[in-house]
Amino acid sequence: MEDTEKIAEEAQAEAEKAENSQALYEVKTRFLGRTGKVTALLKSMKEIAAERRPAFGKQINALREKLEQLFAAREEKVKARELEARLAEERADVTMPARRRKKGGLHPITRTKNELIDIFAGMGFEVFEGPEIENEYYNFTALNTPKDHPARDMQDTFYLTDEFLLRTQTSAGQIRLMEKKKPPIKMLSPGRVFRSDDDATHSPMFHQMEGLVVDRGITLCDLQGMLDQFARTMFAETSKTRLRPSYFPFTEPSVEVDVSCASCGGRGCALCKGTGWIEVLGAGMVNRRVLENCGIDPDEYSGFAFGMGIERIAMLKYGINHIRLFTENDLRFLQQFED
Ligand code: DAH
Image 1 (spheres, rainbow, N blue to C red):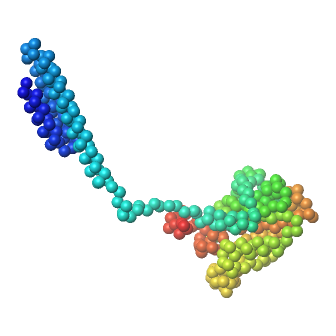
Image 2: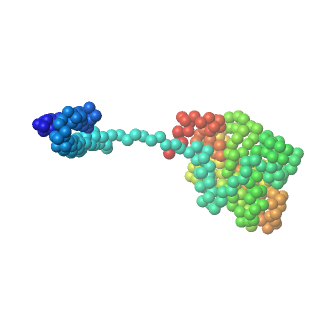
């Protein structure tokens, strides 16, 4: 019987020595486990005289309870100490340099497109996007370019069927909008266009931005005023524009618009080939026939339209010398446009 007291003392001493949960668990198993000391005592019951068994059993149960309490108390202390140690070890060091997060940037074409939209939205234009697969009526015929018109040749075209094609110009959007909306109209139509073209400044897929204004009393002066404003915001505060006569079937008169070279200030350099001017877009007064095709009376209304290549604007603005850079996805190129 003195065993139970000795065992309790032993357990107490060993538990005190256990400095962590693992060690304590081992101590616990040595006393209360299946082959532990307390279990061994229980097993020894059958060797004890029957009349002493109940008292013996009680004693062992009391011992077990005592040990369980003792281990539980020790466990609480050990766990608390372990938690403290972990907290100390894992404390965040706020003086460490932060890990840099890589952030992406907008593609230069998207940036340029957004800039263009910002400029014209500031002048009251709304954005309208037409479909990339067009039929030949919207892409050509309604734009006063009937079948066999020589101007169709200037745009080597991807036909899907006799009727459907990948649009060659965002001008198709003009017709779609004017069929739906009557003047006053101030529309901006950005998007992808497709032509069978490929060299340093042309690619089979590129982007255009179309502009269209139709109202009473619109003149070429309104066009130039707006383009001046555009050039000053997009290129340089001192930029000027000039109009040169040109030809497009859907405008009359038609013009090519040059912007004074921002690189040399108009004195002449390699970029502007010594002329001081750079061609940036086509434009003109909307041809009467185009207005008529859309059910707008050309005697009451007039308008101007313009169309520019977004790649071309981006190449001029950022000094990019090959159009393929836009689609190669070379990070060394793209990263130069991150904010
Ligand atoms: N669609 C023409 C092209 O792709 C550009 C253009 C010229 C658009 C004159 C216009 C315009 O709206 O008036 O070459």
